[in-house]
Length: 332
Image (tube, rainbow, N blue to C red; front, side, top):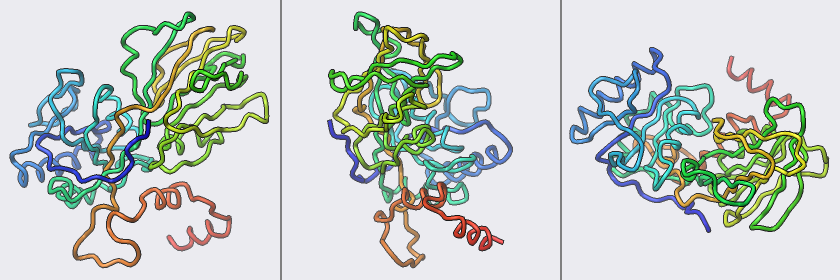
């Protein structure tokens, strides 16, 4: 299965879901300014919010699930974790386009600063934005006999990664890895990470995995502190199905987390199967929104790669000691 990765036009939304981090004063002020702007310029648009104690005044309550109100656009205010939370709200079916504003400590998935909300909102509402479809992973769980465990876990879809880890156990995990039903290897390690290209710059990168461009359709398998030094990260096509089975000889169960949320514990003989989801996350790119009064050299709107900017600015990709020193000097 190949995931859609081409940019596509965004239709004007009629309903908006606001997803935000905990409401500190800067977040409260930003939400109020954003809502005032939307209600004044687009009075026919309905704004929804999760049913939380800090729900903004004047918005409608929205609850995820099969009977949820239809959402045309998701607007997030926070860090990268806010986008992951927004993804978790749409575990079944298509995900609306996501317009993300940075108000957190990490911004790899956040193309817009909150100060630019007016131009970004206008471009999204007037159909002048474009989206990059970031693939997600869907996960199912099996018991020792291979039968699926429960129904609650059928809906798990993740944007970054699925991680099996030994948790607080002092023992290494023994995990059998199967690719499309074929046994690949028996991994003895602290755990394994299965990530999307988007998640390749998260936990997988810290564990030594490769950096993968988010427009690619691929699944990354990264070991966490493997006993064998020849066990290196692997990249599979998105059509692959990856099964991680806790070996019968494993001395410990394995904790399983999805996008940083602990969800399940797998005992010896139990397994999780991961494959590309049918429903990616459509993320609006900053480079697709141009200021008509702004003349800039280089590529035109929609051609510039937000990812290239981010690995240079946020990851300091291939920065030498000398260039880092010059960078600090240029900021003073």
